[in-house]
Amino acid sequence: MKKVLCVISSGMDSATLLALAIDQCTDLDDDVEAVSFDYGQRHRKELEYAENLCGSEGIRHDIVDISAIQPHIGGSALTDDGIDVPEGHYESDNMKLTVVPNRNAIMLTIAFGIAVARGAEWVGAAMHAGDHAVYPDCRPAFVQAFNAMQIVAVEGHGHPDLRLWTPFINLKKSHIAYIGSNLGVDFSKTWSCYKGQELHCGVCGTCYERREAFRDGGVTDPTIYQQEPVLA
Amino acid sequence: MKKVLCVISSGMDSATLLALAIDQCTDLDDDVEAVSFDYGQRHRKELEYAENLCGSEGIRHDIVDISAIQPHIGGSALTDDGIDVPEGHYESDNMKLTVVPNRNAIMLTIAFGIAVARGAEWVGAAMHAGDHAVYPDCRPAFVQAFNAMQIVAVEGHGHPDLRLWTPFINLKKSHIAYIGSNLGVDFSKTWSCYKGQELHCGVCGTCYERREAFRDGGVTDPTIYQQEPVLA
Image (cartoon, rainbow over all chains, first blue to last red; front, top):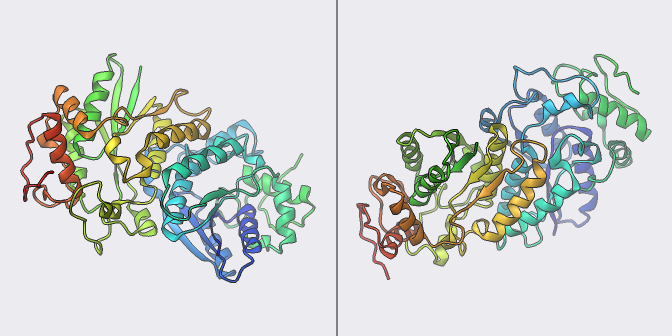
């Protein structure tokens, strides 16, 4: 019996992670569960999308509210109404405004706490190679160090082989689009945009990245953008 | 300029950690700050005591509310009213009921997020050798692995030398009592008891441990216990 607890937002990476986890769980008593974090993000819409992604697969989904932490860390365009969400390409310098200090480490340690409580064997997370330049806690070196830390931190508790599973860590986002497409993911049910308005804005970093991933992965982009991103 | 962010409860270890941090900050523009966590502990009284410990030293103190995480992790006698706080010696088997899965890793990653935001150089924590047997995330190996993880996780953000400072990690609690006493800590203003009633109960694990530490450290115990612990 394998239990996988996936940390998800509502983006194409998360949807593909869930699909891949389901695909890897081949035994009848294997189980995929998911958890999302409410960290006061202005794109809270992603939480509803995450709920729906799981609902349509019959996957248990919990939302952990860590928004009380945010005022103490502060200062990111993702959470602070006083800072505009930067427009332009994801890897450009101004995208650093979207860095919430230590966010992945915080969310993943909480996910590991939940995984210990539930006896899960894998904690799945969807970081990929395109995140490396902007977020230090999305790099392969982080995953390795994080696993090493967690092995010590929960020794004797939970599943003895509990570890962080990051199947996309060395892939480009376009590869994820391709994999997701092959697994039958319905990308129209995913949400990426940081602005969290009615439609995907088309000009924030994650809209650029989304559009580019579909194009480079050779996958039809079902997204209706408010403004069409101008891709290089 | 050195800034130290101490993660504190209200116990004798935390009070001594604060005193030691102040002692180490010898330059005029050095700064000690503190943070405590509300994780739904039934001994919430410790939060008031922590507030007072800092207030009397003029130290900035923030309480981070992570109680919304608790229901997802659950199942510890420290937080779950359905489980009795175990009585008896701290290192005995039933004390494992007080383990909140991954608690230190969770609190410390949040503290590191705050430390990055504020440019702190040290995150201080008061774990000691007596914790090792019960809590895997209080061991020296954990501190080492945690620091290695954090170096990767926040590279390029915050203070370049940011690290976890655990001055008591290889000391017994009785040594902490002795050091605190030498630094002039007023232990009557500290709170340890897990039960969080009017007086220290005297029979929970942390009351035993407290009493023993004063005795073995040769320090007068100012605590009034409801029941006198019977020490070996």
